[in-house]
Image (cartoon, rainbow, N blue to C red; front, side, top):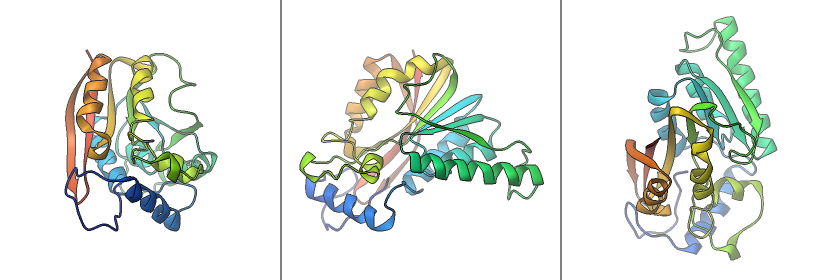
Length: 232
């Protein structure tokens, strides 16, 4: 979720204040009101996922389903996409149906698969999924640090806001993701410098994960990394 800012100060990984978060949430509402659409962070996660995803793959917080589509069309993985937002699930299902129809008819742009497509499930993080069922789990979490006084309590906030620390969804995800991973499985997590990069790594390490950086890009107000976590 690389952000458009209206302030003139700061650099890569620089601190942002509550006013910046509030302005960004408001500006995002001007572009899309209910479902997060693909942006630079989506592209970064997709790039890393295409190189790592295999077997049964879950994308948590799929939004419009764009990342899941890239993985389903460019890898041999069997993809499940989930989101808590019913509007996002509808958009993702429409995308999956188009991809499936294109692959069956041979009209897809680049994919050589004839069975491309993906499942879509409405879910809050990992709650409904069984133990040890996924070889790869992907997550581009809501991570904008947001002052509680500047929250709107709508679906776009759900897609963008990571609470005061920016880690409100990242931490419960890391608490539970090891449960759904098959032996030898991997987690690809999009981490922004806005959320405290080292804090996220320390939290994951305390839960038995080792890590490596798959891809990283710097932008004017943040650095985005896709980190691959493996269970020790």
